[in-house]
Image 1: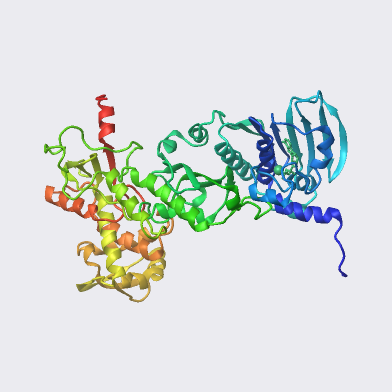
Image 2: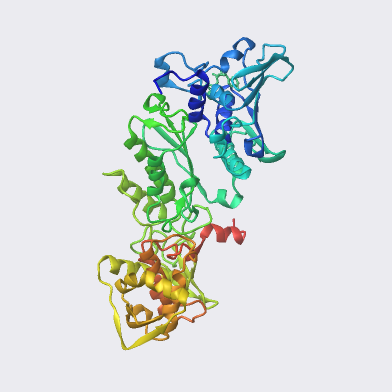
Length: 578
Ligand code: ADP
Ligand code: MG
């Protein structure tokens, strides 16, 4: 085929593909237009996941009748004039592409009325052609209805997912804009059902409550005033006990634009270093305010990516702000209250001026220390591990939990989970240092395995043998065990090995550890003291001491909590002392 210019229609559809990927992209562009129009109420109605219909209604400034035809033209905008404006973009839109792109791949009906016009104007565009045009009564504002998205573009249509999935994407878009603009009242209905409503009272927290359950919101910490000049970081981050399986709960906004930025998301994750179970991610809602001249939003037609003039500085500011909020929080899993020490004289009966535990600091001071240290030198250093304070064992309940007290309250420790954590860190360290020991059996053990376990054994044999086992195939479904890691003990080894293989069966872990770590975790789980075992006071104290030394004392290797903390405040509240 000789080189030729594409028809306007084909070119338009190609360009539209960059802006309109799925129904949620349409919702996003239309919502941005409402915000730019100064609306205080934005309503989104969808049918069949947005494929059948997406309607976005606002009470903003409207479009003067004479300008309506231009609104659908590509590169037609009221928000940008010359190239210099690109450096100081204060609106969400500026490319003048959205309405043109949406109209190229759907049927669009626009109904709009500015304040100074008595009647509105209705325009319907189908396949890029105006099919209706005329005066129409309507309130001040704009309503854009998009129907039959991608009907004429089978290539795109077949990529659309189930209506529920597309509805989910639209929900995500609406809720994120509601967070970025808490002063605007947002509503979303899907197939006639109200699925989201924000109060529009300016409080981000109230929007969070409309999106998430109370329990989640109570576990969010507010970010304090940020120290970095020129970059303001505000918002909420979860306490370390609030974690999710992926990064999808890290929401980033730059100058009130919801953006995707791997590097900034990484800065948030880094701020939680060693505080979260392996493979888990924090929850964060971060709002960055930065001089528009220092950020380029014109990176991609969807405007969801940004480029910073000084990315390192922004990265550092985010990491620092998040770290400060997290570090100022009680280092132990608490229930969202700031921690303070027992009231009155030292909780041990000593004068209050003496630290209750030599060598430990109250958490806020410890946090400040961490923060200060982090301030010096490299911004990108991960946060140091947050350890437990020294604890005094009080007793055991239910032959399962150890009761202990510390400077900031009462602690209930799950003896099995805590021991698992202790053994895991010890064994992982020994493995790192290639110092794994092995205990030879006086008499090798012949194991007959069922076919399922044979498969697991074969898959993990090499790693097992690096972790203190000496196991070899013994013909058929049999294996010969010559040595085991010493922590396993020597009683009931047959059951122990079978248990470990069972634990390695995929899907039995709530979090995804690598193969080697899963094996270590399985060995430690089998070796740890069980619930229901009576422990002597010295045994409990020793276990608690070892837990205090752990780098990640708050969770077992499988991500479950090792302890619950009841702060002094919670106890006082519970007993109506304040
Ligand atoms: P952009 O937002 O980049 O300017 P769009 O194609 O999204 O481009 O919109 C084109 C123009 O139409 C806008 O610049 C604006 O003037 C007008 N417009 C679109 N939607 C609305 C709305 N909801 N309220 C008022 N004006 C609107
Ligand atoms: Mg726009």
